[in-house]
Image (cartoon, rainbow, N blue to C red; front, side, top):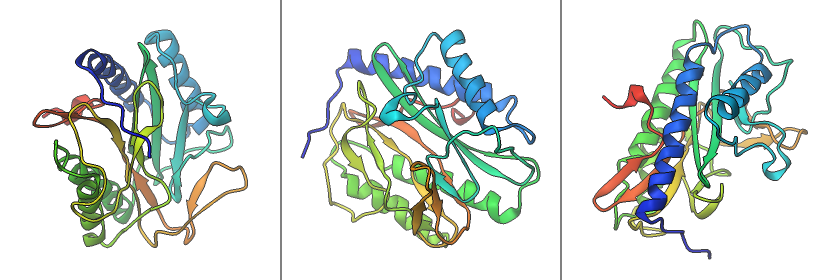
Length: 257
């Protein structure tokens, strides 16, 4: 099993800058994501912003042969939704926009849910409770805790809300590479798994389903959807383990209060 790459203080400073820039991409998105846009237009605008305005690299483009700079996962799409000129957002949709950014040799990874127009109460609740499930996992992070503690906290919260946790996809170590050790499961047993150490950096990105946890991949080889066609939501942050807890490297301005 591969060992987690512990980051030095200098490397963490570079990751902090990548995270800050990525947070600014979401602030940019906040101003114009709305009904009537295609998911491809979101992709193209974000690519121009990352490259031209931020002088950075969209790290997902070309990764594993993926042609786009982000994933747009709408309604029953769990993850890896492919931007398309034919997919037009409409009032009532929920969409996860998942973006990566590399600057100074280090990658940040984050995603945010957007609720388009008038969203049904049950969809809004899923979005809000998934956000809180992510934070239940984040708050556990500190040296000496385990990844099992993180996953158990997320699973416990989500299931108490009446939801299910997708098990096929997980968070991951991150740094110079998009995917490093360890894998970060969003379910598990307290005390199990890798022990967290200062300098570890990884994503926490639970995918929470309104119905059953079962998923399938569409014929495009990317898009993952719920088998029961019910809604799914996801949020993601990049986290660093600090001497006494955690730092959210991709924290957005509205989360700083």
